[in-house]
Figure 1 (cartoon, one colour):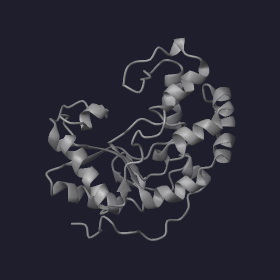
Figure 2: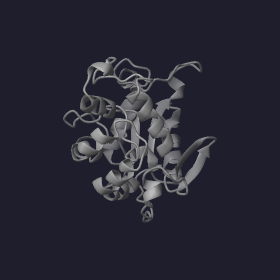
Figure 3: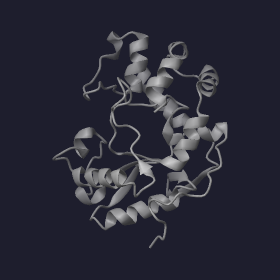
Figure 4: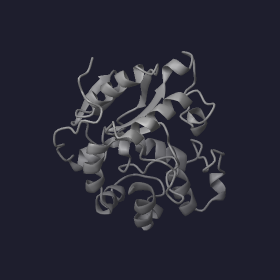
Length: 237
C-alpha cells in the first residue's frame, strides 16, 4: 500500500526544459507500466489515487499519460489533412472542406491540443477510466456521454468530482468546458496541479511561436497569425 497522502504537496518540482515542456524529450519521465509514462514526481500520487479509488470499487486505469510532440503533431496533421475526423462541440462530424483555414484550426483545437502545447507533454496529465464498470472487450472512446448520468463511468466521474471539490487531492480537471468556445469539457482528464502550475508559467506564446515556425505542421501560417488568440482561448486556463 502507498503511504502517499492524496493532498500532500510534493517537494519543489524542478522546472522543465523547453524540450521537456514541449514533448520533445522524455528525460523527466518514469514508466508506470509498459508503454505508459508519467513525470517522476507524479507516479506516487497517481498510484495513491488508484488505491483510493479501489476503496470505492473503482478500478482506475490510465488511457493516456505522456504524449510526445511527434505523436501530437501526427494527430494534428491527420486531422488537418482530413484523414481523421474532426467533431464540433456536440460531437458531430464536421465537413472540414467547407470551412476556411482559420475555422479548421479552431475546430481542431476544440478537441486536440496544438503540438508543443499539449498538457500531456508534461507527464502530469492523465486520461482515466474505470475498467471495473465495463467488460474486457469494451471499446473505450473517452466521450462526455461515457462519464455523464447513465454512462458506464458515471460513478467514477462523480467520485472524482467529490474528491477534487473536497481539496483532498492534488489532481484537478483542467477542462471544464467553461471557456467561451475553448477546449471542450473532458471529465476524463486529470492534471497534477503542482507540476501544472510550473509548466503553465513556462509555456509562453514566445516559446510556442518559435516552435511552430520551425515545425512541419499543416496550417502553419494560420496558426502563427492567430497564435495570441489560440493561446488565450485554448492554452492559458
